[in-house]
Image (cartoon, rainbow, N blue to C red; front, side, top):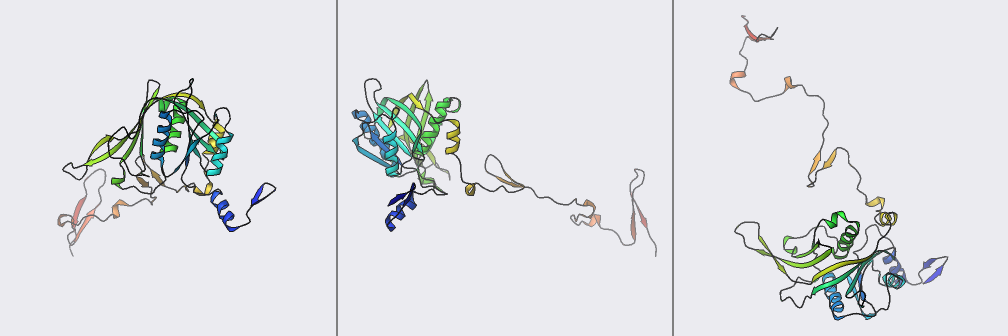
Length: 308
């Protein structure tokens, strides 16, 4: 590939296909995360990164070598690796005396860091410590957020958005009932964030709707919020902008309620109810030779007999 005036021109068909795959699209591919560890790590951080990689597979890249970098001070190495692997999400693990067992969740926009949130691990239970059958690889999880902080505090709102981006999985048009078997539950309480992973078990209930039981499968985290690096409101709004071709066209006289039910409004001319065809009954049938005289001055209508 050659670069002239800032434009990369491919020399071979293979490089052309590579550039086309990296080019902007109307419907972008699923987001991929890169998971890496810093220069100093602990056994807890190493195992935690492996467990999160297991939840995120196959949309993740795990770096096994150490990367001596500090994302909050210099993020150039993260941006380099994201451009190399085409990843828009990252998870960085490190450990030191000042911030032990440290995890940094982040996302990038146009290969530049958009948001970073630092979380400290206070308690951790790995996947292997919980002896239970696990969900298959690539299962799309259901995400549940509990706690007022996720709706009130600005930092917790961004953390909720970041966690949804990180764990949501690929976009699908439909999901079968048996495929809803993995649940990730996040609870914000007393300044801490509790992350739990469950497996849904569909039991017999004696009726058509199955009875659901929850079984913890791990990993389990007790996290505390540390440093944050949030994008400005203008940049955050720019990152959420959608192409005009993807925006649905507004249809007249059609609306939806909160449950997704579709309502339509039909405009008709004024209807003459006197000519409305009702049910035919013997008692309402006119007799031969009778004429109905319309009521006058509030009196009842009279029936006059006409002799021939």
